[in-house]
Image (cartoon, rainbow, N blue to C red):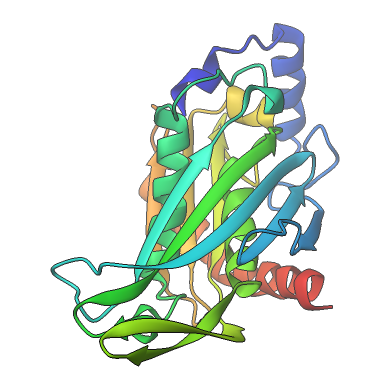
Amino acid sequence: METLRQRFIPSIKKESIIKLLETNKRDDGRSLLDFREMEVKLGIINNANGSAQVHLGNTIATVGVKVEPGNPFPDEPDKGVLMVNSEFPPVASPDFEPGPPDENAIELARIVDRGIRESKFIKLEELVIIPGQKVWVVWVDIYVLNHDGNLIDASGIATVLALMNTKIPKTTVEAGGIKFLNEKYPLPLRSPPVFMTYAKLNNKILLDPSLDEELISDARLTLTITSDNMICAMQKGGKGTFTLEDIKTIIDNSIKLSPIIRERMLKLALG
């Protein structure tokens, strides 16, 4: 997300953040590996099959899910289809411009798509209506409503919860056609993955970076972790580099902290 780096950060602010990091503290009071507070709302879009809104600190992401019959991919005729898109409306940040999705929005959608897909969270094999001909297509639309850093984790969590909130109509096949019934059932899912994004700043590794931290960071790394502690996806951003020791530290922290974040996420969603 390179264009976001163009925003001006006063030198005194940058120096303050770096000075605090030297004592393993952050300017919002968190430790280096603290996740910000989360708030969750489910079912907020009436005309969607499922939806969720997540507040991660002051970052807000809303996700709507639509499910409709469509054609399977030719190389996977026995599986449903997942499509993820994201939009950065200008009202969410002075860094966002009107128009079609830019490279940052496309990157965000691809990271969330890969995490959901590679974790096997959606049982795509159970979304076949007519084998080889018709399957359920799951459309995920991410809307960033306020940008205060770490759009990836906020959007990933909102996507997971919106999919858990999704219900699709039961169908039968009569005379080769699809008949929709009044009854609905939950989207078939496995245990949810967790998205965890780190920034490297002045040789310190920070979990869940704020916007100020992102703007002056050297590099970014996002991991998606399954419930059995497998890393199923990884995406690096920024021009800086991570050492092998950095990667080992990030993986160890993710394995240790992802169950805690998953439990917090599910408790907020399910009560």
